[in-house]
Image (cartoon, rainbow, N blue to C red):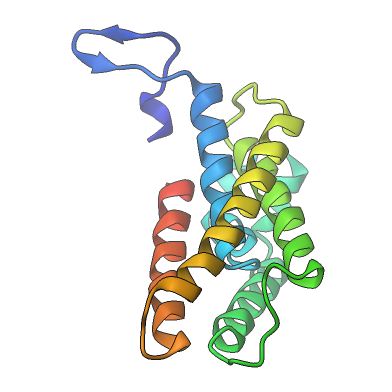
Length: 170
């Protein structure tokens, strides 16, 4: 996906996208994942990182087995716990603040992966904003979806979060 991105408008029938805009879009997508499932954004960024594409120490750290194992364990734990009706609201400070922080962090790290001249603060803002918006959207979805059980709505939300993570990290 990244290799086809260039600056400017349309030439030869192909749409050309500004790499900074594409990088910010990826930051927003992975932030959205963190808004739906707080741990999944960083897990997706870590698991999609390759040592050969790591332009910085931060990127190389994500490819370490212990980091990948930790992010996978956190994402799996959240996947299981989310199906429980006893889990507190994602909109409570204890649920929302980690989503915003992890959305900002995963957005920043993902935006820096391909050396686009994207300001880290812009990527962090995009990731955190999307995380906040999708945290509220996910909560609204769960309340209004009309499924017989909350677990069914949660499963649909899992599919959406996984799809967004794949799209963001492609």
